[in-house]
Image (cartoon, rainbow, N blue to C red; front, side, top):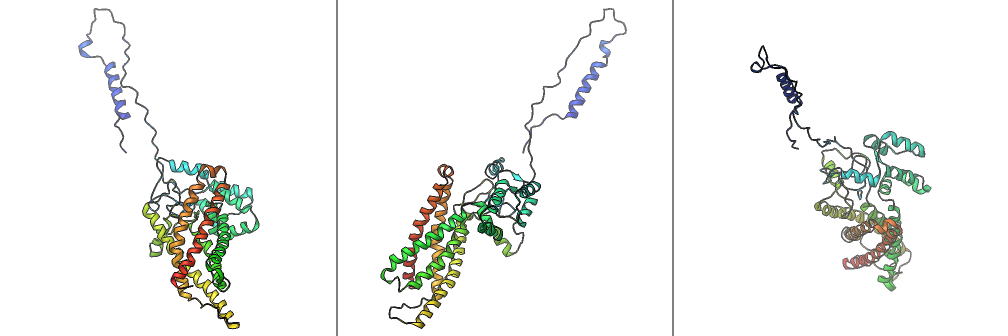
Length: 396
């Protein structure tokens, strides 16, 4: 930063003293010993040495700022560490401009509460904070909105409050998106119903003879639904990022810098590049594929056991061959990595647009109705598509 040059106080003081001394000391040329003329009246001179300096703008040089509590949605996504969600910096690809990030976060998430204030509010509500939240309050503080959301979750019905205390992953996602459980429940119910309708339509008269396959699809689908919604949901991360220099530590920091989904909203101090968003698509595809393969092994394995036991008791000419286990699991993995990943990334982006609209903010049921509608259509299409993939691959 360049500053304009200005006279120093010492030079100004020395100049003033020199002029005053010259005025007080008589000059030899104008001070004779005898003066025949009457003494002149003293002259009162006002010498203005310099014009007042203009008032300089106040310079602000803030020190290092602690991370602010925010989401990965998200939240965000810079760095996932430091007790408050995602942060800017080199890991996240962005930093605040002229303090606008701090003002935005304070307007959306409330002021940053210190440790003593967090303890006072927790004692007033009779809530015991978990260890990671206590550490975050000591290190950097917690945003008021996030703290109050946690209090409200603890005051909720018994199953939810107990699950919030037991599972930090659920707690962090509920703090970032209070409608997270609604989305999970909607996905499970709609997927189960839509899968049944799609199976009946596609299999037709063979539905009951292929009931084991339908049961396997439903069993795997419930587990997969929870994973699909959870892995793309924004969340708040309490704790510090890994400082390990090993391979796992570097990978953890790289993955932590990615957004939760391709279309996750940016926030001041929490911005993503195009490369990071593209990387998120492939990274989530790998995760989805892994979940699909594992669930396929478990679900199809149970289904094959049921089919084998059933045929050992009573055989029928209408029995279909037992599907190959590894090939079926591989099909689930590829289907989730390609089809499900693409469809759910788009759904998250559409939900983000609707939830951020003035209409949905004024009337929250609008966003809920949109979630039900878009997920209903997605599940019908996905269920029918999976049957086509299974038949094309020769698994079913």
